[in-house]
Structures are given as structure tokens and as C-alpha cells.
Length: 228
Ligand code: FES
Image (cartoon, rainbow, N blue to C red):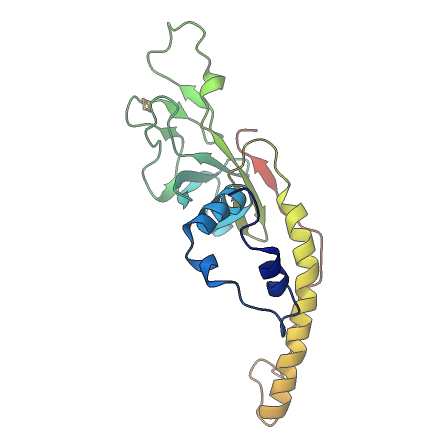
């Protein structure tokens, strides 16, 4: 499907101010064509949250994740950078890591023992010594765009250059405090009317707790194209 998955009328209805807006049409939740569109236009083309940095806490920590059916290795290099690769040996396609998580000195394929370092470079390949024009550089693990923000790890399955994660998150980060501030005012009003006499445990001084939304700030996330 190349065109929009919802009609202009449906989009206009959903995008109205929330009191007047309609729900998404029911087919958005069960239509296989819409699922395929979302996979093509979002899951395989955009940044997707897959893990937390605590999942790969130290240099040489790795974890396998599934992203839209792709078997992916997330690994923290000895330089501290989080990278990601397809968990597919470049020889004949065997998974190079079968453990779900742990620490790795290297990734060694169990089939014919090709060895890759934590940056995905092929560093040993048996029986290739006498091959003409065999290039180790040409057989690195295939990298996947990886980036971190606020401890979250995002992957992007797109090939080639992608829009940096930060560029997509900045507008959101600028909007969220405003939304939370509105939400906070509403919650405070409810507490005023219904729980005014009840000490709020979140405030040690005895008054009501008040949520302080984070101030918009520059995004400290790193972006790494594995193997780069
Ligand atoms: S399939 Fe990995 S070394 Fe042969």
C-alpha cells in the first residue's frame, strides 16, 4: 500500500482537539494491510525502542533482541559505545551468538568458527588463506543503526543514512513538559477537591505532592553506526 492507510476524513477526525476527536477506525487494529504498512513505514524505517542500557551494562556485555523477526545482537564495545548487528554469520548464515545475554570476548560462529570482534569485524576465517581476493573487511557482521537516549536503546533497521534519533526526539521532549504541566494542574485540582484534607505521602512537609516535569534540555544521546 503506497497511499495513506487512513482516509483524509478519518485523519481529520482523529486529529481534532481531544474532546472532539474520534477514535481510530477499528480496522486500524486488525487489518493486515495496515500492519504491513506500519512495518514498512515505521518499524523498519524508524527508530524503535528495544532495550535499556542496563541490559548491556559493561564493556563486552551483549543481549539478543528480536526486532520485527530479525535476530539482533546489541553489544557494548570496549570503548563503551552501544552497537548492534544482525546475528547472522557472513559465511553461511548461522547465528554467531546463541546465548540470550552475557559477556563476550568475541563472537565465534559454531559452524565453521569464523570469529568477529565486538565491533563486528571479521578477524578470523578458517580456510580462506588461499582464496583469491578474499577480504575480511567485506565480511563484517552487518551493522544496524543504534542510538541511546536517557538510558534507552533505539535501533533503526533502515539501510544507509538515517535521521539522527535526537532530531526526532527534540520536538517530543519540548512538548512533553507542556503536556505534563497541564496534566499536573488537572491532578492538583482533583486532589484539591477530593483529597484536600488528606496528607499526601509524597510531600514530607505535609502538603500535596506536585509533579515537576523535566525541563527541555539538549539531548545527550549517542548515535552509533555499528562497525563505523
Ligand atoms: S556459517 Fe559461520 S562460519 Fe560457517
